[in-house]
Picture 1 (cartoon, rainbow, N blue to C red):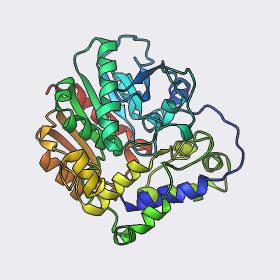
Picture 2: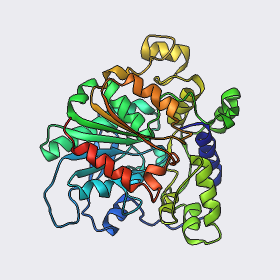
Picture 3: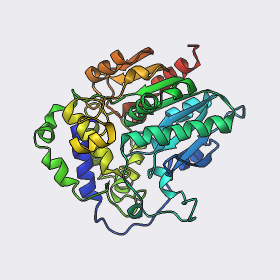
Length: 389
């Protein structure tokens, strides 16, 4: 994710704070799964640091064969939910399910269905204003992802599973396996779609945030999470994009500005704007900004004093990508301005077990998720997963 996306995320925060009264309606990956005729199971999992995360499961396809196959866990992108994988009938989760995989979709803490899970001690769904937002990338990888892996393996009886991540979800995959290297033994194949790690070659047109970081910090000052909104799953802007014929061209323009050029999209997949952006912690956004500004792939920077406390060093350590030994498959786009090829090449050179790299020529950053032309790439992912290592 580059500076353009950070700026647009800040703009989204301004747009959605203080909007009028809305009625809450259910609109989630689960709705999309059921509406497309697939079976749905949902689970709540407690992490080691006592957050609750939600899992949506498609145990088998809709062909009538109820045989449950190899599990695969999919991690969503920043400000998103598991809807990344269910936006249309050709989305990756459905393609995998029809191919015989047992598909599991993780919603990170306080995103998607995770924010509606009752506290196991109080039996009450906590308000977003009354929960701790003190987490960054590390907690999502070390706690959320590993908790999901362990739960799925215990539930299914398998000893290994496949894991995939989209953009920020791929980032969290990397962190989980670098920080908890013992989990590499539990991953059969690792699928990284437009992965973000080091961010040296992000879109330079918004370099102003790198030169003048006070703009970023002033915008998020005194906030714990962004964007703040009363009903994250009932957004006026997203509903207008879907229902107002005059708004649709503007909505496509906004998405193009966020994701870059050559955004192939149909009006059905604009549904994602109903629940996008989801709230995330300011600490997550700050961590992203640190990576963009410093051109490293490293842990959260607490400042010299804080770093000594957390890392026994004045600077945060880099993530050790050499510890990621799972068989890795990477899918990228030549025109991606958020995960540009030069940065992905840097990542590829540091991962020890890359089996295949696929380059799409005309996708934007979100093309693999929302383009009507994504199906051939989803089928290619299936092919790679079915091949023997």
